[in-house]
Length: 431
Image: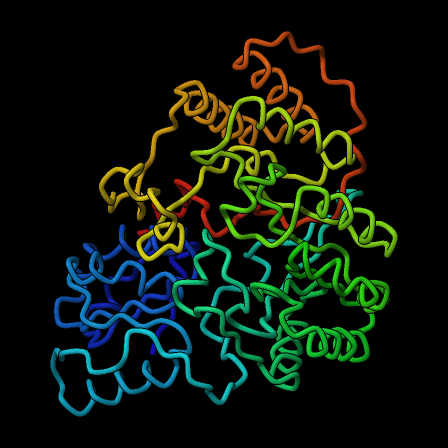
């Protein structure tokens, strides 16, 4: 068996030539885009192989994937199904019709991941501290799925409100092997670390006890930060540097449409609670939606200034456009699907146009600005000042030079990728 990470490595013709099974993991939108771009080349290099695509984004794109020649599509708690595919292929020795369920949500016996075939950990995203120093970062998941049903979330169509706990000893052993490889920071990839707060605290304690110098970050809902505020000080004592939270909007009407279960002012409360605990909050946003107005966008920028969070938000977060994939719970909103265009296989979603063309134009201009700024490695506050000016100009308002308190830099990962992020040119060139 050979493992290739297409975000970092090139396809090897010799490896694929005699392959009988090629399975591509699509845990994020970025990975799915890369997989779809790679499939024609893989079919050319591995003409005898049965093609399988598995992971969170596979079931939502099942029809598209099968049209591209994929024989097996798996999502959810898929490990037993993936083993079954391998066993049947070994027994039959030829292409098969899928008999495994596309989505499996039964409990599986978790094992420690085998990372031996992956590139060195040092080649992946790393932790960047406020003073500019860096640390090698590892990845672990303490749970999968999510108890919540946020309408725009890609986890929801697959897990439908269910989540699964990964045993603490399995998680810790996975962390241990990454620490041996040099990791001094762990990023917990759970959709929400506080879906099981008792389990999360058990993991934090075990990590700190085993590796007192290793820090970590996690993703936690605004609602959970407030409901479990008493746990935050111990998270900090256990090494938590920052918490990513999907705020998404500061407009209560948009938050209701997304079914986020928090209000605009809850965001303020979460900022205060994390600061009091000594943990940085890294909010994420879906800044552009069909319901976003230019005034509402400016209100988002003003809130970041008010809360001194400019340095806490990667500029790309202020350009994110709502992605509506197949199966999204957004499609259940009355009248919403009628506002969308036909499914676009290149986008992996349903495109939409804003009723105010100025909003779409601003989003496109900001996206181009941020792409240039990232290439030039401009400071966040400098990019924010340009975004501030452009947003006011788009709304026909005179923008005074940005002079607010941007706050202090916070610990962050070097690659600000999110579930709706586009792949980079470098990634797409890997094959």
